[in-house]
Image 1 (tube, rainbow, N blue to C red):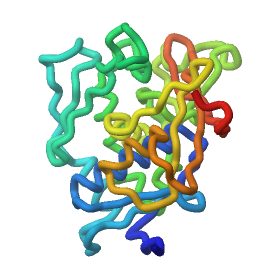
Image 2: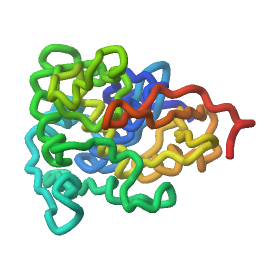
Image 3: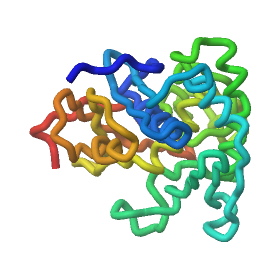
Image 4: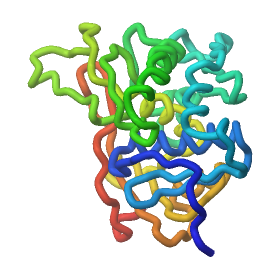
Length: 260
């Protein structure tokens, strides 16, 4: 079966775990707007094919909808910093940070990496505000590479990393803006709601890319490496400490003989 022509694609570095999970989030949101959407990784891009193409279906429409949808904080769950966030138009609730799963007995996901006075809904608001403006400055296929100075982020993109020992202080703790990739951070937060990595050896986390078109409901199994897909590649990353905050490190190839 031949690979279909993509409706749109975004440039992606699959060794960047934030960009990988952002692509998972992009597929999930596209599916919720246009059921039947499929996505796959190919030649440095994440390709998306929509069930029916039209001028009102595409990455620009998706990003615009994401930047405008009503957000509601579910104050009945979690503490102030961790109240779940509901994306009204998409019918999507983000609450993965309250799920420790098999990773931890703390009650929180290890990927809940923000601290201090930041709240989940506050981070989402700050990240989505510049999205539409950023797309006017660069082509949509480069949305994962567009950066802006911000004080808040989830910590998914390693390119926003800094070393306190080199800087002499912590930008986060001082409230100083740091180059942030809002599309990556926000879409990855969506991606983690549906696609989770598996635990590898030496406290690494592992995810798998796929090269055949898959619908959104199959992507979580593919990301976990549970499907015998041709063209599958595995990548491992760690969560690293940055002052009182944490973030994801760059991924490395994960060889089959290292699988748990």
